[in-house]
Length: 107
Length: 121
Image (tube, rainbow over all chains, first blue to last red; front, side, top):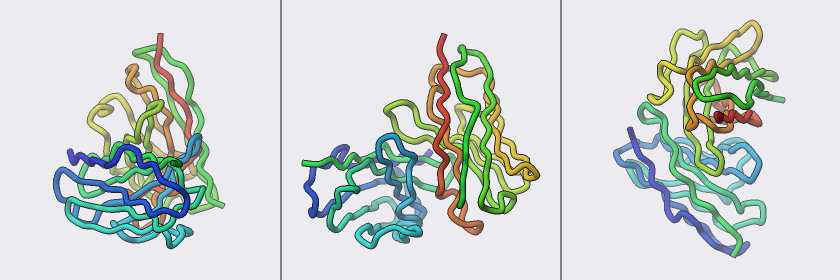
């Protein structure tokens, strides 16, 4: 099983600041990594797939990078609606696995 | 508009059974792989099971293998999860999910609103 480790667990930032979230895989997932956003009481939403492709309707301030075992989700300038929990997920091998999440909170 | 509406959750005793349903609309259901993903209260996301378009290929999380069965009825645009021998650690919100495109597998979007399964005596 591929274990995904997200860091930091919590990121305290202000609106307008840049957020950098990390996801590290226990073995290579090539570029088969996605990022999701989940707000309280809501289902997750796909942001990025295949490491760097924005899903439909996702603003350009969200970007993904990386390959192999190290990946980054960057939010270039935080908007109030971006404070949420972010999860990474791999589809390189079964079972499909998610990281433990990073909470982006208002500082 | 694409919609996934789960139902069938509730309170069940350990060892009991429950059948979840997901009603799909707004897209050609029979063209997509479908999946179930769960989230224990206050915890992260966990993939549970996948099924291909025709229902002939299925994948399961090891901890549910032999207890849960994913199935679909393309004529009714419906996805199911039969859960037997339920345990306390199966307590979670269960989401019905679809890939964003027919050519994309194992990325999840959209998601249903989820149905809560609570396993407790």
